[in-house]
Amino acid sequence: MNIARNISNFVFGMECLGCGCASERLDPWLCPACREELGREAKEPSFPGPDVACLFPMRPLTRRLIHALKYRNLLGMARYLVGRSSAVGRGEVADSMKELARPFYFVPVPLHPSRFRERGYNQAERIAAALASRFGGRVCRWLARSNFRVSQTKLSREEREWNVAGAFIPRLPSRLPQTGTVFVVDDVYTTGATTMSCIAAFGKDFPLVLKVCTLLYDEPASAVMDYAADCEMEWDARWIGFGKEKSPG
Ligand SMILES: [Zn+2]
Image 1 (spheres, helix red, strand yellow):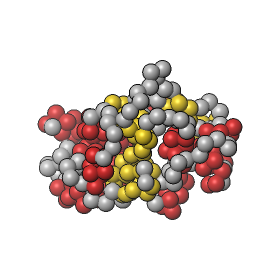
Image 2 (tube, rainbow, N blue to C red):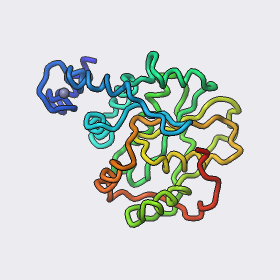
Image 3 (cartoon, rainbow, N blue to C red):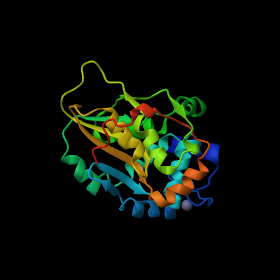
Image 4 (cartoon, rainbow, N blue to C red):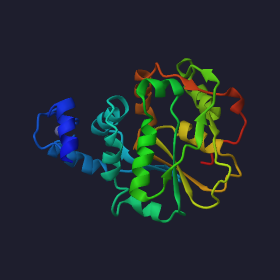
């Protein structure tokens, strides 16, 4: 931890990523007060659907931390948040995972290729790796973005949900395992349009149990503001995905 702390101090100074206060007791990113706050937020996981678990609520603190993971290159943040979630120990998420068939396969939602080039990494993949190392299992890149490109920002909300419906295609191994649980992993779950589109991409005859796990759950109403802030984002989409198998949930 000392090395991580020293690097973090060197790059970001001795400021808490949560409140910005100067502290010599960072862990290495949060001061004791913010760490406590994160502990309280970890007690509020969400299950917005029967097959969906979100480890933390979207709050100012968790928003800042996920922002650090996405835009400030703090890749260790994925492991940090997973390690402090109720997925660990005897929390609700940990209990629900105990019931599931093993082995576990963690499938990150693929990033748009241009986003990937710009950022150099896919945050969902870091989260998938953190979950796999915590729960046992492996990261599988079993999804890809389809090529058809439509600017998501020019669409109404309803059209946007349709728009992601064909956005992903499966990239499955030729010898697919026949038992176990697949977790589609993303950073934030809002309406579920993205992750459900991933699940639909696996098709009806997919033999493994399909679940969704994200770090944060954001109320759709507050996500509209985030969406506006993120409005330069473009998505791959394929309109011919219409009418295909839709989400199971
Ligand atoms: Zn703080």
